[in-house]
Amino acid sequence: DSGVTQTPKHLITATGQRVTLRCSPRSGDLSVYWYQQSLDQGLQFLIQYYNGEERAKGNILERFSAQQFPDLHSELNLSSLELGDSALYFCASSGRQGASVYEQYFGPGTRLTVT
Amino acid sequence: GQNIDQPTEMTATEGAIVQINCTYQTSGFNGLFWYQQHAGEAPTFLSYNVLDGLEEKGRFSSFLSRSKGYSYLLLKELQMKDSASYLCGLSADRGSTLGRLYFGRGTQLTVWP
Image 1 (cartoon, one colour):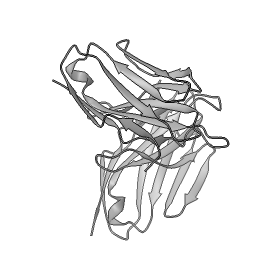
Image 2 (spheres, rainbow over the protein chains, first blue to last red; image 1 turned 180 degrees about the horizontal axis):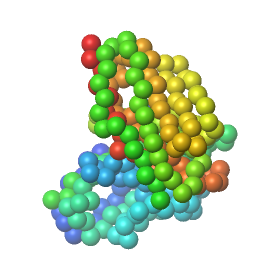
Image 3 (cartoon, rainbow over the protein chains, first blue to last red; image 1 turned 45 degrees about the vertical axis):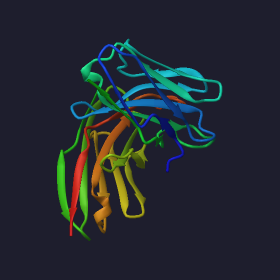
């Protein structure tokens, strides 16, 4: 158990819909990261938040947005869903005092299926 | 941009040693790391290299040559539980709070009894 929690574990929805994925980081970690993993693209970085502010962006689609709240939990919002958005979405956290940002702790993931 | 190459699949026998290679091209470099991912599970951190050379951590070692854009992960005394995908990745950003990581497609290692 990494200490990172994600909900829901599975999500099945239709094209055009909007969903919200939730992540709670490890206690003490200030950074939250979102990744998308699909068979054809591998594990892709989407976005990083550090202590409530956006810190780095990857190839995140405009239809996707995220935020980190004052209690450091984060949400990833996916809208106008397409079949190609079906993937495993991981949240990770890092950034405790003295720890490397590279040593990221991943949550169990949310498997999104768009039908 | 970043380009990371690693073999798609490898097989080895229990008790043996296996070396998983990774080559990369990047416009910036701040560290090379390895993660392990069992099927259906989350990636878990194994190691990272910032400077050239070998980093040893128990049965796992990781090597980096920045001039050659090359790294390898060495797994000794292989066990069945080492069957997993091994992800090579890098960070191209400078800054202690920047954690944007770029991953390769992963090498699926199968350990046979």
